[in-house]
Image 1: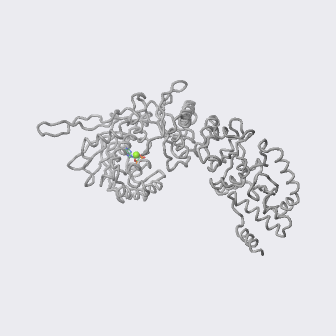
Image 2: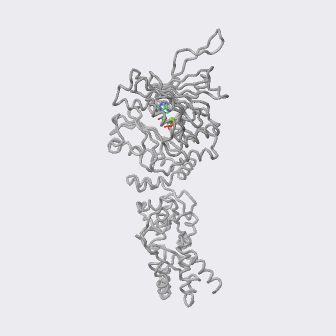
Image 3: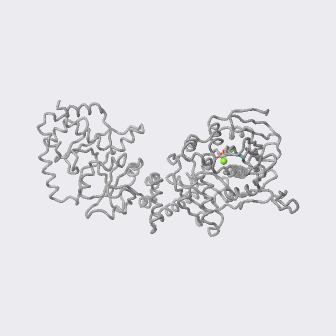
Amino acid sequence: MDKQTLSFQAEVKQILHLVTHSLYSNKEIFLRELVSNASDACDKLRFEALDKPELFEDAPQLEVRIWFDAEKKTMTIRDNGIGMSAEEAVAHLGTIAKSGTREFMAKLEGEQKKDANLIGQFGVGFYSGFIVADRMTVESRRAGLPADQGVRWSSEGTGEFEVEAIERTERGTDVILHLREGEEEFLSAWKLKSIVGKYSDHISLPVLMKKQRWDDEKNEQVTTEEWEPVNKAAALWTRSKSDITDAQYQEFYKQISYDSEAPLAYTHNRVEGRSEYTQLLYVPAKAPFDLWNRDKRGGVKLYVKRVFIMDDAEALMPVYLRFVKGVIDSADLPLNVSRELLQESRDVKAIREGSTKRVLSMLESLADSEDAAERERYANFWKEFGAVVKEGMGEDLQNQERLARLLRFASTTVDEGVSLADYVKRMKDGQEPIYYITADTLAAARNSPQLEIFRKKGIEVLLLTDRVDEWMLSHFYEFDGHPLQSVAKGSFDLGKLQDDEEKKQAEDVATAFKPVLERLKTALKDRAKDVRATSRLVDSPACIVVEEGDMSSHLARMLKQAGQGAPKSMPILEVNPAHALVKRLEGDERFDELAQVIFDQALLAEGGQLDDPAAYVQRINRLLTGA
Ligand code: ADP
Ligand code: MG
């Protein structure tokens, strides 16, 4: 291939612009990124060589070497991993395959702007080299290709890069950084060693640097030709728990997650029995920007006997625990396990079940801790990830009971953090169901007319406002023998909580009110399935309810917003015969007009939208002006 000059993909140009102009703090992470790429390349070689051992050529010992040239102001990171063909160099170093670039940019433009640490999170780590280099040169040959099919890629990190064919005997990749003016601090063995020690200690292959020796004659450190490892090169999870400090666990977490915050909790176990594996799993403290993307690549890496196999949480972790990060290293799976095989493997199933249980116990021990600070941590966890965990209530019926105990809600009694067990403890004598209401926002839930009688009687109601709540409730009906009951569904019956006197009174009122109800039914026949008197209201004239088996109006609205047609079923209007406005209906010549207004208001009060808002405004104005 002749020398070619090619243009970077537009996204890459944007990234490069940001990298070279905005990242000031944590510059040293470029080395972590490049060593991590070198290590990935070795993992890939090891994996491909399972089928084609000849790929190892005559260098089976995988390693990374780092050196620098103080005079030329260059440093080089060399690996003997899989390498790149010319096409791969163009594709992998000229375009970004992954989505998420836009989010990355948005984040960089935000407050965290200057922190280079973010870069690895978005799969653009290679470009971090340009933080300290004004030219990067990559020389590579893909394992298995002949020596004359090497490639040289080179760029100043602006709009373009060059590629040309070169002769290269060694398999693998050299990344050469031509350091910028002012970045000479990286031309120091001590400095580079300390960065490798900080970020790359647990890379499972050796990172080698040239040994330094004190020269008495010159009276300074000189570099020898002898190579020595500068990292531990032992995968952290294979070491015994008692040999690992908390700080090491935390550092490892940062490496695999690119999260700058410490994890909320972690668990490290060697599991023996039906299936043998090691798990090191972390729960992050903060939700990532793409938490809601259910298809995103998982945070749990699969290893088999210390060989990296793949990133794929879905087979190893249920989707509702997609925020969990970590490593699972199996002793039983075949090394050439494919994604398809993973989905079906009984061993993988056992691993997923075991790991799910581990994560749940980790969360339970925070939630139920004697220590208030731990419970506080759980409350924070819930704020970040609670809505995702709720997905598990429908997805993981096997663990539904355990998950139900982890749920936290807002309620009419306590602003947040109410567990179902707390609720049950506070139930009134004779109260059977656990009452809840769903709404778009907490304010709408809290002010909902349906709550009036509950407030009057001091009965607690859970306020559910996560989008996933309705879905969860379609899989979850009772807790500890108490049915979950929507206060906006079905006919109103407080059962034993209402005394006979009250019931009788309500019936009498309803009978006396019958003629008005009949007229309301006629007036609203196109809008309400039924109109009935209720004692669930105290201060409001009317409210909308749906029948027991029907979809709640909140869910119907969400489906509509999502562009999905909801089955059209009319709601029921319940009116409060004791309310002044309702009392006024009888004998008023504007009966029909008032009926429409009462219905519209009931709809508005529960967060619904009017089909014809202009007509509503006109009606109100006519009533106000007495026209
Ligand atoms: P990521 O590592 O998240 O894929 P990077 O920006 O760090 O993103 O690297 C981009 C791609 O360039 C890698 O996915 C890989 O295909 C290729 N690459 C980078 N460094 C090397 C290397 N040392 N050996 C082989 N391929 C590499
Ligand atoms: Mg990378």
